[in-house]
Image (cartoon, rainbow, N blue to C red; front, side, top):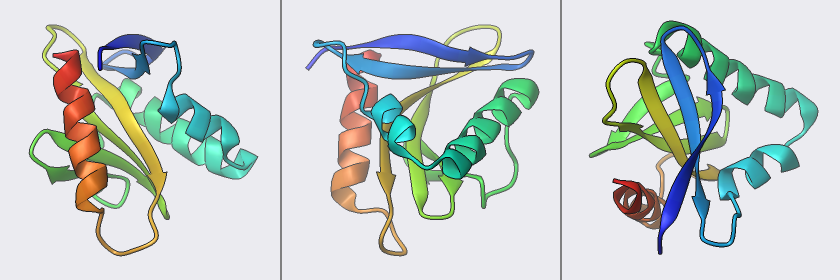
Length: 121
């Protein structure tokens, strides 16, 4: 499956993009739009923090998961992402979003995120 990248937020030190499938759908944006307003604000604040600083050092908010996959975290919400190899600002592409019900991410969610990230590169 071919996916394209669409920038959704930019700041002094970082950029956030999402992957969009061939039909123009973006699972991550649909997930965020379906969240309650308070949860949306928390997630969008994490994106703003990354764009302003180029990193988030707090592992309770942004964590390396496996291989090239990282996750923005807000309570049970996980937005899986990876870094794009571009010069200049640090750029992250959001590839998969979910509400986590167990302590660990499922292997199928990690596999899906890795496949989407590979289809971008």
